[in-house]
Length: 46
Image 1 (cartoon, helix red, strand yellow):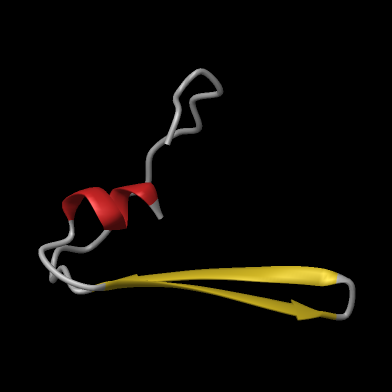
Image 2 (tube, rainbow, N blue to C red):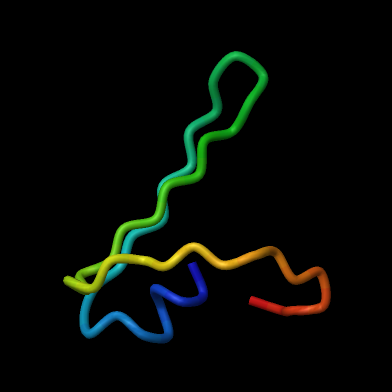
């Protein structure tokens, strides 16, 4: 969500759905750039 808010050129949306004891988190933003998958970094904030 932080990246969407920080880098998207326009609106962004965060959706949370609780279902069967789990929470589904979805993020949408108005950028046309595809996200890149990075290795987890436990020391990185955001």
